[in-house]
Length: 147
Image (cartoon, rainbow, N blue to C red; front, side, top):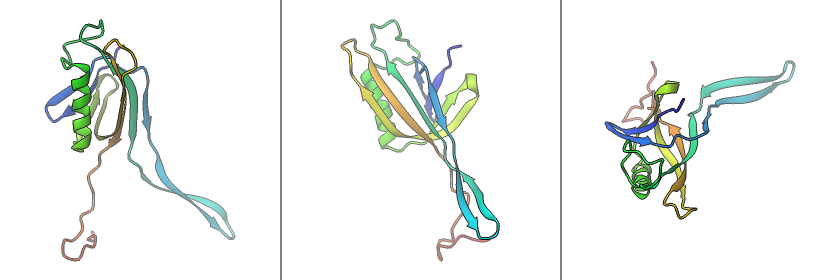
């Protein structure tokens, strides 16, 4: 199965024509170890941290067998689009329909490499889950209101 990797800015999709071989999703949770004198050590588990998604692939040159009109951009225009979204701190939607992955995220790291003279550009991208603030502070006092 060849999964479809899509990064969407609203209704503007960016399709990664050559899907990566590996996809890394990191999830973690806040925790703190507390040592009680008569009881011993206890682990206190807190809220979930934001998820981090990392993958690598390449943008194929127009004359390559991997090139597809699913993403008609040249490799350098693909790089410029993702760099622009990163610099503008756009809130994007990362979608892999085959794995039922739909996440709001932002690009925090984007590295690209021109290693060969084929016109292909290799890249590594890191996305971080975007979450809205759940609690609202009072604009006058700056304190979080109690429920």
